[in-house]
Length: 525
Image (cartoon, rainbow, N blue to C red):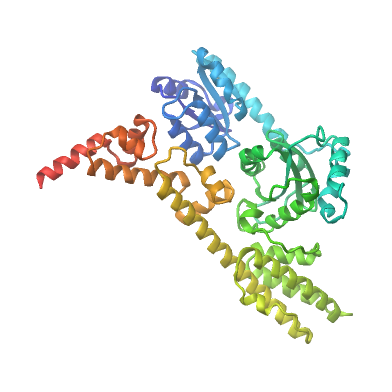
């Protein structure tokens, strides 16, 4: 059963649609209705419907703007427009937002029902394709795997980038050598409710169904992860990267019923940087916690750029890094205890010495990436001793590193949240102030900043911004003689009617009524 939100400012038509369509018989359930674009957007965020059926001419927020904002917060929600004949060309402008259907007014309930059946078939197809247990293999695979897994960037060859670009064209990954493409790597993993990795090769096809809507790509399965190389312009990445990863997570949750974790690399300008991007994506994925339902981790959010150039770690060191980044203290300690237990035997001192040197360098890099704390750095000096002494030394350093990483992440999160709050406080009067704009200014992803603000402040970015604007508006309404239109403009609203709507919804009374009420109270004094 798919869920639906119906939005139309004509109450009679909206109620008729909800009442007269036999939703359940065609596979839908109405979970909300809205009389304007703002209410529709709020319902999409709170109810997470599979379908938004909306009039294209909505108060306060146009249909196209509504579609854009829905894609920002809920990429998996399908959108169907109701529009008059003279609005159809206008509606077609929203094609970039993957509108699933256009319905022309006037429309009978019978015709609407038939079109909803068609929409259901389309959504069925999306669900089925996402969960399809197959994938196609091409010889692009033979180019992409070494591109990501081998360190081309370290090879001293002045024409290496040109050679790689020629190979990319030859295998069909890119169309021509004259391109302005940049590159990002995603590492995707899915888990069940118990935290067990359920990533299967078939997930490659599901991920690709999302990626093909936004960018060039090639994906493959490797050791419980789906690795995706994305190719797009800088502008396309800025516009769609956070949307496509959100789409993958939401589709995995809604369709497969699994939790999804994604690690995202920094943007690379050259093929020779793709190996580094792969390492970054895997490291970012390592910040996922099995206790999280789903998560998106950008390496740029988790770790600042470091000049340290460490060699690829062994599997055991990689697991240690992941536990230091995202594991619990108990998980880390248990892993180390089991590791040491398994190292007893021949040449144990030599094995332990080698492992400790590898781990110390790894710990140093992780801690440097997230904190300026130098206390642990001073202790990262290898001291050879007995097996027991070396074991105790390493466990102590690993546990302290985990505490420093968690403290550094918390401090960084607080700073970012404070920066966002400062921008809201300072620039609330700017109608263009948005989550995407603020996240770009403080150099984090919209997904990360949105989750951070909700965690730190207990409400969304939009709620914080609205609260600031409404509290300032309340001050101006009760404390000045400014016109409502002027107050609206000073509080970031271009539309006076929209401002009055938001004010009444927030304060429970219109601006004019509040001003009159305040005047009467003052006269009574």
